[in-house]
Each structure stands twice: as structure tokens, then as C-alpha cells.
Length: 126
Image 1 (cartoon, one colour):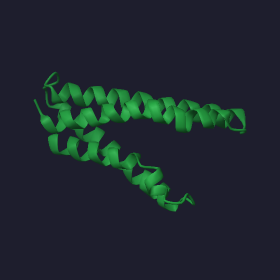
Image 2: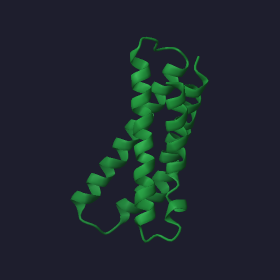
Image 3: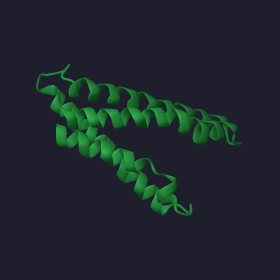
């Protein structure tokens, strides 16, 4: 068992739950109700669920590796890949939030905190 990776998987699972609970309420529903063209609206709807799939699969992968269900050399590479994904998600979230005209955008677009925690824990465990 690898406690760094298990911890990363648990934070990722928590983030996934937040994505569905808070993200659906605060982002997806208002975006779907917005008066914008149907094609961009449906693309953004699909993107929300692309993220959903990634969050679910990466959480499961981290937990599977952390609990020792995957043991050949590939899991280390996969964990590092997941860690880098979350790191770059965090970087872009910070850049976009900082550049936005949203007051205290970096605090309102707070997902980067979880992404960094997942990235660091996964990297340390990988």
C-alpha cells in the first residue's frame, strides 16, 4: 500500500464528488440556462462531462495503484501522468483566475488547491 497515492486518490474522489455536487449547481445548470448559442452550450455541456470522466477514472486509478491492485512498472508512469495532469490543471486555473476580471477570482475558482494537493501526493507516491 502506498499512502501518498491512496491519499491522492481520496482527495481526487472528494474532488469528483464536489465536481458533481457543487459543479452541477454552480456551473453546469446556470451555463445550460444561459442565453447563448446552442452549439457552444452543448460543447460546454460535453466538456463538463469529459472532465467528469477524467476525474472518475483518475480517482479509481490512483486508488487501485495505492491499494496495490496494479503492481507492474506501468502504474508509476500512470501515476506520474495523472500528477502532471492535475498540476497543469492547477496552473491553468490559477492563470485564468488571475487574469480574469472576477474580484478575488483565485479564491472563487478554488479548484486549483485540490489539483495541487492531488498532484503533489501522487508525485510523491509515484
